[in-house]
Amino acid sequence: MRVLGLESSCDETAAAVVESGRILSSVVASQVDLHARFGGVVPEIASRAHVERVTSVVRAALADAGAGLADMDGIAVTTGPGLIGALLVGISAAKALAWASGLPLVGVNHIEAHVHSVRMEHPDVPDPHVVLVASGGHTRLFRADGPARTELLGSTTDDAAGEAFDKVSAILGLGYPGGPAIERAAEGGNSRAFDFPRTLLGAGSLDMSFSGVKTAVLYAALGQDVKKGAGSVRPGVNVADVAASFQEAVVDVLVEKTMRAARRAGARAVGIAGGVASNHRLRKRLEEAARAADLAACWPPPALCTDNAAMIAGLGALRLAAGASDGLAIDAAA
Image (cartoon, rainbow, N blue to C red; front, side):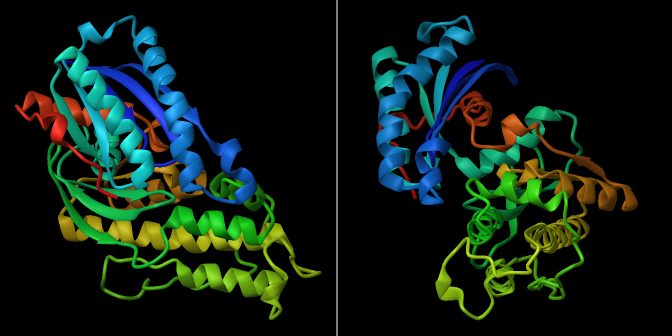
């Protein structure tokens, strides 16, 4: 089955063609440069950029796959969660393509697609396995027990891990996006220089919280005069040490919660997905923890960690193969 996928949940306009689990093309138009000066995604700007780019991105994905719309067996599109205006652009484009071609159309949950991205890269991943989805908008733990069968085990009670990276990067004046900026700064820092809180680490819950560590970084970097604003790090504070200590605190929580979830779920493997899954320190620590527990550890390549349409097409293909078809009535769910 050959499926065209569209993704526009946040600030990436993406389209991809997947056939029988194999990625034939994957095109992503990033908006990082548009949002960088604001230190985060501006929904209105994101929506307008999607409108401007979606047609060319779809054309490029079809061209890269050496196919036309008539060669597709179906269309899949992200329906949520995400920014409502951004989602509507992708959904409107997918509806137009489905109406013009007569192809079946299915909606795909963005987070479930991230979970599926682990299986796309590792088709033989043993079930059940636990997947941590960590991104700028979401941090959730899932048990996966076969294709398209997931169970939510835990989630963040406040900030997502990726959101905390972005906000701490802004506090330290390191720029946007925060994940890569923090990781680069942390390379030259001492991860034990600051003892930042690991909230909920000792609790039996699988839920997580990252607002506390973010606030701790704010006071460590700016002192009591936090009104000075982000980027005004007080004299004598080593930014690399703060970045490394913050990163280690977040990684500690993510690894501990993932391994705790694996034990409870009787998992045979652990995986990570989402933008934060590109973090090398997180990958190394989780791989070490999994090895110690005699579990397999797996994750997608960076191109499948960040928002993309290949995972949408891949999961959409499973839904289509099972006989699903949402038709033109599908709508966005923020």
